[in-house]
Length: 300
Length: 255
Image: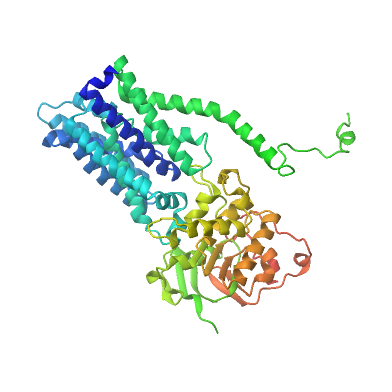
């Protein structure tokens, strides 16, 4: 495997695996609470962080983490307090974040919008040694939260009102979900890019759902799909010289289509197995009561 | 007299600028089964949701197990069945996974032990859903959804059950099972506060009925007897849900 001989590809593949694990792991809770596009919003806000990183000559990945966490906390606060005008506030946050990113990067010495493009769409060759350290630390945090608190996050995302009555700290868990999603955006920005990260949070989960009946299985299959497409996309982008982010996202959508096509015959087989298992239970088809035929066949 | 489990005194609440509760008093004592009745928009759902802290209260006092509600922390003692037509979320989940959420109040940091898994299985047994434990909640009928939501509330073995319209959209077979489940909970000594549209198959279980109208308590005492055609065996109310104030109070309860 000559691809592993290059240090930059080793770093890129490690980053890709971590993105493949973390993005669907957070995304499943966002999909469950029907906030599938939240990752997209955070991605926009993170652009300001990247721009600030360039302007102040700080690590763009840590600046992006800081700004997107602040943005995510703000989004949660908007959700609590501004019920009616919440969407307008969020729109301002998203586009303000994007505009801020472009502005700051152009103010930076020697910076131009072209610097931004590797952050928007991902770039393998630019994953540095220090980026890998940051990505590993951030990914560890995401896995710790999404796996360690899975029962609590499941309960809150399934039925917020009920979760409150079981005494769970619902506001804290909502904030934690938002912060974890923001951290995931920073993890993913080097590999898939800020504009495409949301796809990797949502589409593997949607693809896994085509096959599964349980949350646990959906989680496991979504992560498996995530890792497969990020590795597949990274390797393809190395051999074919295509942008990794776009390759990964297109592969994810292909996986979704393939699994959706597979799901229909699978569901039919499962229904037949169930019917065989429960004889006399729910019949698969409606039985037409006998003795009605004569009346039904009345001609005009 | 046993001690009150729920106590509301002079509770007022507004939704927006519209008063929904206009100073209601309600006491539920240990072991009692109390039905909260009234037309749509009479404030019965708001009343139970104020008890569990889901609706801000502008005046009055609410106590749970003798403690002021804002200081009450012992939520494992309360089982809540929200008014829902579905137990499903945006991602597939099995019946067991949904019911397990109800057990979290009894666990430390969400770690499940053997006893917790058994409690979840027992709750599923109580509502007759044990054979569907591994099925996706998406595949269930309306009545089965309601049974799952009740099992979720029972998983923590609560002393107080609060149910918001548990019979809404439930088929007859599930209604019978729910009535049986409730009977076993009452026999166990549970206290129950139910919001109901009509008494239906739960009637024999109910000790006391509180009827609300326009945010005020209209009747507090023995459950009103059904009269006229409402008393006929097999009589079933099928009411379209109309906007508040558009229809009269259920006649079977008050006339």
